Length: 229
Image 1: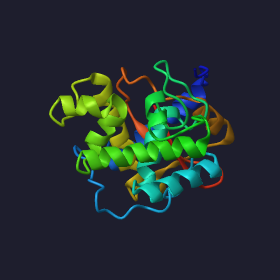
Image 2: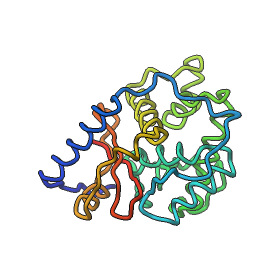
Image 3: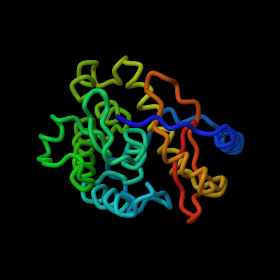
């Protein structure tokens, strides 16, 4: 379980300002349909984004490249799933960086779900399976990652009418679009070390809550990281 972190009012105000500026500059609407990935060249980097751990960054790129899944998409999923916490455990039993359920971990031969290499590889392989299953439709693959492929097929290969799954697909879509937007790096606000510590202590809001905004901040080392409001 995650430990709840209190964030100072000055940091909250800074986050609101960063999100407001990002929205005003580039618009806050996510695309209605994510780009299909099948047949598309897969990025070999995280486009200046970081989880804060160079080893995890490298593993995301390795697994994404090996399995033909854009590492930027894997990063966006990981940010929503665990906010880059390696030992994250959900109330439903999903574990690790990519929040794998026990059955999924077993399906892909994972022996230590908290090992970053195994966990990320399992998440990448599962996304590859879902993309193949749903003809490269990223939204359906994301719905399957959240609710299981059976739920997507049950509703005629459509996003299931579950509010949490619909919010999940919307959130990942916004993260992915933001990371792929060439203007994101240009308009990212700089975060101090204090602000960075507060950001890294946060966890994504429950999917029962509508996430108001997502933006990118520039870290003291010049790299970028996602932050949600």
